[in-house]
Amino acid sequence: MILPLSSPERRRSRAILFAAAALAAMSFSGGADAEDTVRQVLPGAQPAMAPRQLTREKAPDQSEIERFCSNIADAARDRRYALQAEELKQLQAGIDQRMKALDEKKAEYETWLKRREVFLARAEDGVVKIYAGMKPDAAAERLAIVNADLAAAILMKLDSRKASVILNEMDQKAAATLTGIMASAARRVDPS
Image 1 (cartoon, one colour):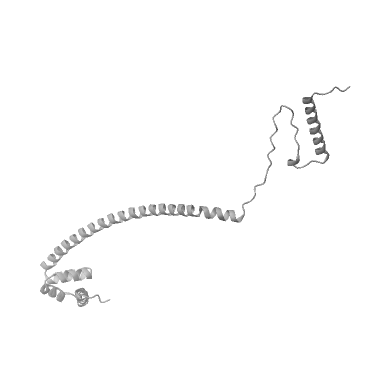
Image 2 (image 1 turned 90 degrees about the vertical axis):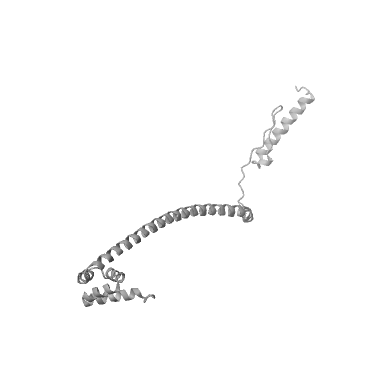
């Protein structure tokens, strides 16, 4: 025997029947797309959330890539310039440090050169005085053994009368060599 249903019970039974019919239709059709599925919602239950569909991300097309590149071009150029400027500053600092070291070495070498020149000037004056005090034949014998440039320099600093007497006492070849060196040193213009 079928008892008459009250109106809320009727609505509930109709909803259940409708859901069962939809479910049967879906299973009978062999399955439909996810958008066509009907979900059964039980009375008093929260509606089910739609399942998240996995979508394949679309590869960016060429225009998007070009737009992106053009948008960041200025920032990339500025960053590249900043990096180059920083590198140049580091290189400049290294160059400045080396220049300072070179200036210090140059000053040190100039100091040593001045000391050497003063010493050589004193030594030459002393050597010239020694040869000036020697007898001409002994001075000629000694100057023939010494380096030709040094002998010529000594003879040039001696009194011309004393130098001529020493050259007169020397061997002809040695005297000719020394005379040639003294003559070329006296020229104002470099012959080469």
